[in-house]
Length: 428
Image (cartoon, rainbow, N blue to C red; front, top):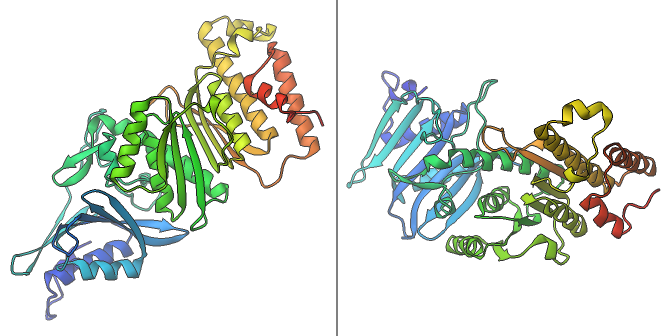
């Protein structure tokens, strides 16, 4: 790709190294082979800036360049239209930044300026990367993918965000952010979650520029997904108000310290339990791996809050299994304990999905992440519909609910009980 640009036509005055580098950049963007541009050796007026990372993104259906400015104490992301971004890069090279590294599919180019300001350019092809088959293998999990039918899936998040270092996901390697090898699977899970989350945000109509998005993440733990959701929402030009809710005080302190250190407005963590939570208006309610009926309480809270998106990854399905009587036709299957446990999980989450649909949501039970990465791989995803179900549809859903309970001899289910106490499941 680069050869025609590096070796100018005979008889033409060769452009200097800086101009050639900018031509390489524009060509890579035009041919959609661009992966990343890194500018470092900062010598501009703002002494807090360490480096700038530029990526090619799609923003509201249009291509744009995302500028991630890394400061000593915070990260700042700004998005620019392609022409505007290229003009900004042109003005920064050799003035504010004395070194630039361009990564494309198959090639890389490095531009540096000598002490006297002379631009020097090196261009070469990348060596083929060895396949990483083990957890600890170092791979570029963050590189955008080529176009075409066999392209790899691009990551929704950037490892360059400094807060990932605080959370132990990345570390500094040769002056750049690199994935900690032991976190390779976790990074894939985080990106898969954000892929699902982003699709739900768009379906719920929360993606218009400047839209405030109120989100609560119950059982946020160390905050991997809480930080990721906040970061993704900001990158889309939205106005997130994200709150992580966690029982462990040390995790709350860790999250708040990292958010403050990097100036992440609209992100906070607090100690609390979803079962003891007062009403709180929300747009998105997330609860991953809440044990047993804590998932039902989280779903109920999401319904009470008016959330347009409810995302739950259930865990420890203990309530239904002791109640289940084995239907005669299924006795040969369910005499095995492992099958009975799997059936109890399927019945529990199917009832939850039915109840959420009754409450006016489009509901899916999907695979969150492949089993090879985690055994807790099921997600109940619900997005509020513009209109509630008709009386006839409610009648069908209530009949299905009663039939499942009768078939398995079930006496109660936590989410149903919570809704019936409020009178929200009264027969049509």
